[in-house]
Image (cartoon, rainbow over all chains, first blue to last red; front, side):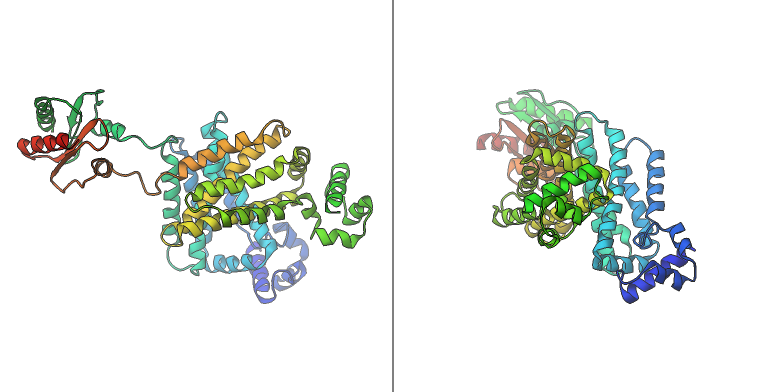
Length: 242
Length: 242
């Protein structure tokens, strides 16, 4: 019944436009009573987006069950639930995308749905980051980033007419967000910090160290003025280590 | 006239609620004709947000004139134009915030206004980043981050009843976004890339290089198996350089 009503409404929106289609037109086309319509859809707008409520519920359920270790990754995965809903019916999704661009009332409705997704993601992050310090700020900004990235990838696919695999564009967009937000909030580590990590031992102030880590190069850092015999000794030790 | 209508509308919304106030009520209270109302405001919703159009125009003008050097900084500054509009009349802004939270129609309207700010900022960034590669993606995600950060700071101030300086919270929120998005877009440079930059010469594949850059340390990178005499030679050359 739900499907039948959505299908009928959509045909009419495409034939005569959204504004000029009434609920009476839709129920006549679907061959059902007016009360049936309102049992399934609170308004004419809702019939255009029949799956968002289910999708929001699925997102909430997913986030409630997800592992705690990677909150940014978790909200990216939650956003992919929306993508899968669109990808499940490319033709319907593309038609709806075109219709939504034509009808201001639908665009506004869509914005309010997108906002609810964003708040769901932000709520999850807030729970993980805590309300102290910048927890709430970071939660809201990351949720907005994830939604914007997801929608950028989704829109690329919709604009292309729903051809090909939508996952690639969305994965790429979400990777950009994860990459940015999972780096430490302070500035990038200094060269010395990176070297220490690479060498897995501290560079003593004004001293010397050398090591090869796991890679095929030897890296040495020495204070200027370090005697050459100490440099050689350190490098030999580093080579011997490997 | 515009001010008088907005004032009258607002009093009525607070007295009897948004839904139960008609345009006729507003013009009666303001003592003007119905046509005057629609000369200034396309709808009842618009009267609640009388300054957004002006603010959007100011933002567009600001971005058209801004220096090219720091696009993320420029959109942060553009967002602050919205803050200043709210801060210019704390009492009105706080009342409106409370009203907007009560009335779904106003929340939806506000979302569409926020979306227009976001698109204005994204448009500026797209122009700076270019449409190639990730230009559009980065533009949209950064614009969404800036808007979310701005609104987080603004909301803190509105929730506090408009007490104190709203700039501090917004500055802090926008700083977080700038810090994150002004770092390089790709993943951090590798250790080898950082060393090359530090040494200001390329590390030859399977070879050796050493240098001191401008700092007080000598950094050497060598392929494993490089003869020790070559290591010593390179380090001596690097020390000699400095």
